[in-house]
Length: 338
Ligand SMILES: Cc1cc2nc3c(=O)[nH]c(=O)nc-3n(C[C@H](O)[C@H](O)[C@H](O)COP(=O)(O)OP(=O)(O)OC[C@H]3O[C@@H](n4cnc5c(N)ncnc54)[C@H](O)[C@@H]3O)c2cc1C
Image (cartoon, rainbow, N blue to C red):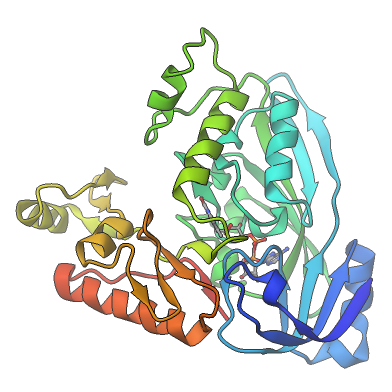
């Protein structure tokens, strides 16, 4: 276990903001987490678990203990005729788990290729991309309660997953450290290719048989072309969630904006892309001081290098205000604001 005092988080948040925390601990396993949390000095201090810091906006220094896990084991814990159950420790880089599954021809998370961050954070917002969400392959997770150090296991129902949402963003926010995640993956993968341009890109390859690796490669290419690389330009991916609106509201907007995109989510609700509305409000590619809205993806707020967290807060509030004024729809943040 390594513990640091007054530690800079600049390299631990993908916005690249130079905030710091009072204590920062790197822990390798559950024993170390228990030892750390039992220390008298940390019993009453505020605590935050982080992984890659790719879904966090730190608005100020954190006056407490930040815990990051460096555990790295991935195993196939069991299998039956149809499924393999893959368990990965929380410190595993998410894309490494994707590659492990692809190499073992286990289907289900290839569409989630290249999402930054670590495995432990994946259930928090039920990560999703290109027509797939974690909850569709999730089996269970192990966690430790931050107060009484009791161990717990959560199955899919207990996680209460929703769109970029889980119980860990609501009732159990900051209550548990997730230590391991188990996924149920298909031994005979069915490819999910209907989303966006995946199918068009795959057909360019003119292959008779497509594999999960082909799908992953296409998605990696699309992502690398469309999304800013946090190593080059600070960002935390989509800043806002895509709002769900009633069918009536959708029809009303459609009569005003013929090009309004929408996806049915239930008999009564449609989801519309927040990025489309932000673009219609004229934000796409616009710079405000040291921060701005990405030129290729209006959902992404970027830090050009010398930005400050307050500038991101001001910009996100400006966006929310203008979207309400134009569409009468309130956007909600996907990023965790600390
Ligand atoms: C360029 C870019 C593209 C992205 N694309 C996508 C995308 O397509 N789909 C998508 O869903 N997300 C996307 N994201 C967001 C982000 O990558 C995911 O939310 C990811 O799961 C965050 O992982 P992390 O380890 O960085 O978590 P962090 O940002 O470190 O933490 C996120 C939240 O989880 C909590 N947390 C982290 N680890 C644990 C743990 N072990 N136990 C308990 N709580 C924990 C933190 O306290 C925090 O509240 C993108 C981000 C970027 C920068």
